[in-house]
Length: 203
Image 1: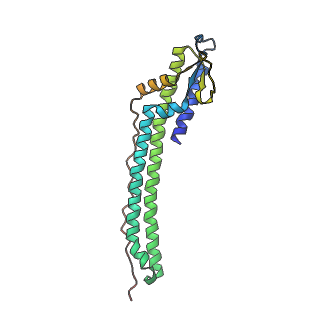
Image 2: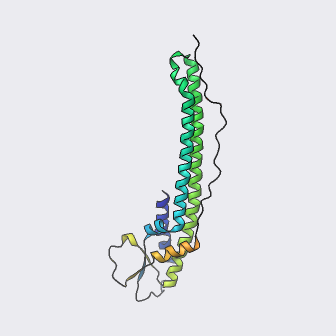
Image 3: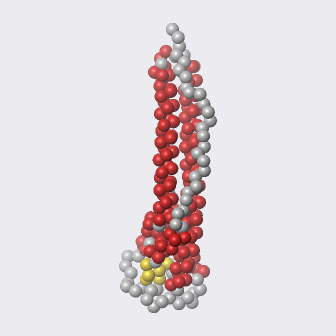
């Protein structure tokens, strides 16, 4: 999802920006348009790689915490599950309801973390897209060329007809965003709950 958003912005925003360039801008005889490979811009820019790396690490940490919490809950509930045949049905259902309530809290924490991650990632992407758009405009102005062409849509470029600006854009973006950081909000905590206790019917 994040990569697709970057790719869309990398391709659309600079293309839209060229409309602001005066129509009479003279292009060098050696190149009639600029080629930009949006996919490379999205995957090779060091700044965006740092975002992907941070997101992946955060997901690993949260997944481990989530699985650990579920394992603990299941371990606490196992005696009740095994004693179901000897328990009063109402007491067993009460224990099940408590189990489901605790699990819902654990799930809620994970969902909140995912929402925070998405917001933080979107903020970093917005920053990246703003800089990438500005860089694209600067490259156009420096080259005196008003048009960008999506590199993935170009099957053949006649030598001298277009200039591939991808490397130049990536270099400039990285220079302006040497280390985009994704600032994740503090991990929410589940409400304190007592462990599920076994209520076995005495004979």
